[in-house]
Length: 230
Image (tube, rainbow, N blue to C red; front, side, top):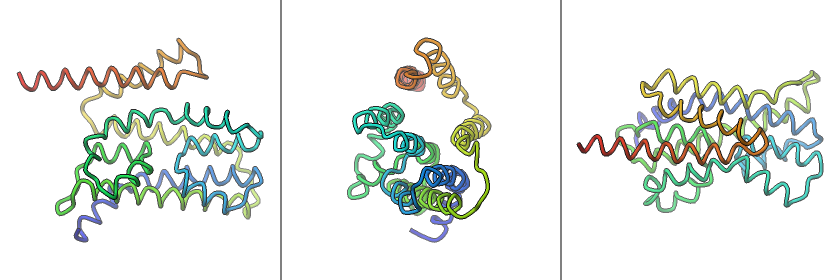
């Protein structure tokens, strides 16, 4: 693995770096304002590594939710990762010792990078995916820790900081729309989400919408393969 390949990989992750510093800081600030110190923020960033899940955890911890409800709520919020994992079965199949960490470190942003980018010359795909995952994990830990320190020692109001999670997803959607000519997957995602939101309501629309997206994208992929063979 040469220095040029490492530099290219780092540059690929720069958008995640900027996003995770702000997103992680938002989580750290909320956690600090709920009465938890910086070690909690560092530990959750290190061992949980789930943006929406960690934001949810702040509310669950503050309200004294039961372990059962915390488990169910976390599963619902992060159910989309089931589909991420299924789509990467072949990519991670022969990853060897790297595989457990690749599974653990699979976030929305990391998934986008490892599925959309090709490894630079001189680096295997598994090494590229591992390094992207590791860098993104480090960024997240830094953001969470920085936010907790800000919340503890900077005496200003951070009201509305939780909106940073929504802002990050919108930014990623716009970036993918601009950089990719094929907008069908994006339209499927937006359409499935809107439809399930109307049919199932805001409380339980996530899993049905992800299931519908997976079905439609699978059909689209198979159709594309058939056309290419023809």
